Length: 636
Image 1 (cartoon, rainbow, N blue to C red):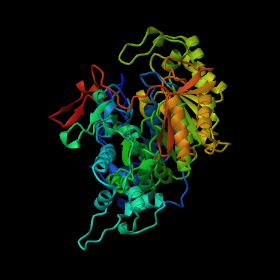
Image 2: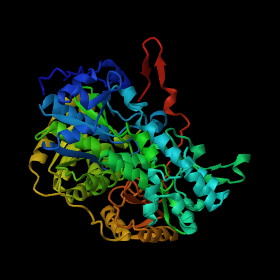
Image 3: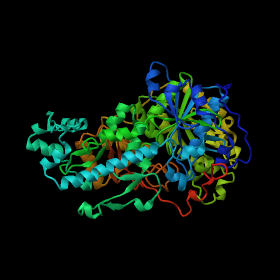
Image 4: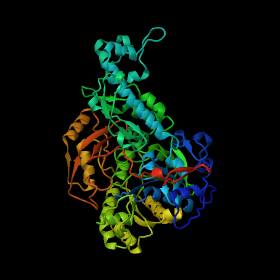
């Protein structure tokens, strides 16, 4: 692949220019060329302009008999608020494998939310000379998947309030007659989706007129308890003023006011469903099984009970196909899904990984990124994503920076937007060494899954050789397969060649099979406690609300689902200020919620905001359009 015409030699300059300037300085290859390199024929994809294409799921079926490539997940140590460069390392590693080491490679990344892009963090296309391009298209709209999720989510929200409204004003019989209106011949019938509800209720009749009055009531009246509704409206913008709102204020709603709120679109369960689905049929089932709340009798109410599961699938039918893009050096990228890494599992999609593994074939590499530190993203990748996909990774990369390790060693607070303290810009080997306890715990936790662990030290210009050596020694002492210094931000794929070689060796030398942290058949509490123990907790404390929810989910038959902990990314513990590798703390579980369609239970450790706010000076101050060239400027 190294001699391929779709590999581009980068013109690296120093100092490294702004990300958008680097992205704009490179003319992307037409996406047809990227597709051709992967042996995709025109019937395998739909074009979205010159630089993007949707790869169709039929590729998985067509290549069913062929072998998979190596599967690599990139996680990180517990990060500073500045981020330690996981996306950049993921892209740089793939550029090294494809452009310098002659390997077939596909990068699998999440789609960024517009919230951070216009808010505080900026885009998520990598950085420096290790980026996905076109950067502006990657960060804004892309192929509309997040918009489809927003539309589907809000259709379901409208269906919930509408159903409560109509049930409040009609008798059982009138309700049933309106749900099953007569056709032109005057005959009433059930729609296909209604048979799902009838089956759930144990009613085996096929004609509405055959229902007894008691069956009419059971079928037609969902009797949703408004207090139990967990489904909220969404939009893909940071807007703190929508966190809590009331609906039903209009005179026509007859005083049916209900307090609710908005989440950011990527926090929607529909996003988590997209990321964990394995086929179109599987997505239809998962969307239909999403639980929006309970009836007043305590029974779970699903999207299919509301009659909307099929319509949600129609809105999502194109979103299920991953988007093909490219790196700065012309290696292929599949962008798909973007679930929150707290409330959801923070990984890109199973279908993108499955397609990629078939396309690269034996000896090729698929590199995917897991959100936040390895205690959150990699743990969920293994215990949730790999469970549903049936895929087994051979190697896990843990990204570390001297900056973050100094913070974990007791360095001053790191705050986004504030200049770094001098401690982070001058040599202090002792501070680095004491911070390596954080790295060591991530290594031992990740190794326990049966994968080889390679540490990637994302180097900054202020890092000294002695500090870098201290990290390498600590990583090897903690059981890492290898530890490598990388300069991919400044040098592109060339700066991650050593990492590529280490990852290849790690994949070729796996001696164990995938081991999960917990079995699914133990109780919800036992699963929570197994994860808490991996954080270093001595025990778990449950609020009254959490106890109530665990009891309810167990009674409803959902205790066999995996657990998705919603916890701060800034510490192993629940307290963001606790750095290093704390032990002996009691993990407090404030509440427990379910993403039943996506397929996990999520305990809330402390307070999790699902709708970020904008800072005083958001990123949008810098974003504009050069009207002479039509190019986006100021994206970071």
